[in-house]
Length: 128
Image (cartoon, rainbow, N blue to C red; front, side):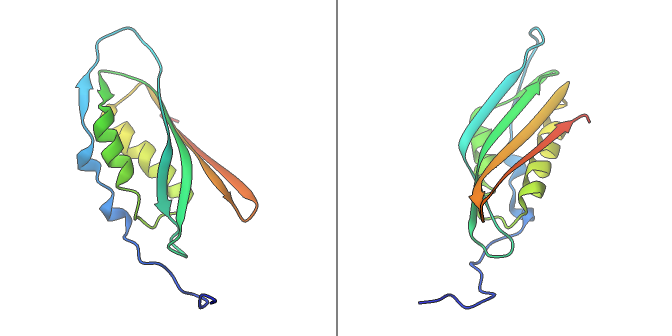
């Protein structure tokens, strides 16, 4: 059975990304780099409603705060039904985390599974 052209699976908009889920804890140690990675990031293609899966890497040098990992998991999971372009998802995550943490530097990188023969890597570093 063929799917009709132009058909999409329902999804929600970026306003459903749950930034309020993010929590921090204080950091007063020496300068260090913190790297958090997961293969469980997914969002939705805004054209088809089909899922886009990626390896997500968050790399930052904390100022006075670190992100609490359970809250980060809830935040990342909130993207699951959001229709958003890969590039915009990466940028949005970098902006949200930078605003929350006020780190010395932060880089968010997504490496999306191959689609149409292309592997896409998006990376945003703040401050730029």
